[in-house]
Amino acid sequence: MVEGSRSLVFVSGQLPIDPKTGNLIQRDIAALTKQTLDNIEAILLASSSSLHNVVRTEVFLVDLKADFQGMNEEYAKRFNPESPPARQTIQVAALPKGSLIEISCIALLIS
Image (tube, rainbow, N blue to C red; front, side, top):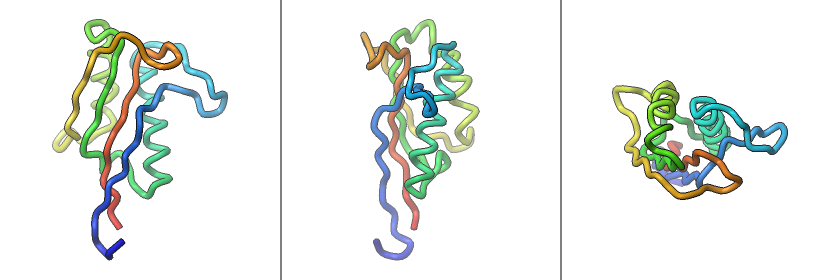
């Protein structure tokens, strides 16, 4: 990579899985959102990026009506409100492992 150039880190859909147990956590949507973003943050940090460098997210919810507000409140805590990443939030019929939420993102990797 050229000094000062920018590359992208693509993080595929992450679930609210506890990394210590490998199990899906069973809590409210705010806790599920927090765990999912914690997992994404760990991947980004391992890739020499961070949540600060996220430019786009995709949030998948099983129940948009019931869970959007709780997800949105927790989500907003993790990103700069002055320059949040572009986001699309989509209701889906089902997610892996019976999860209520899945999040993917694209972040800048700045060298």
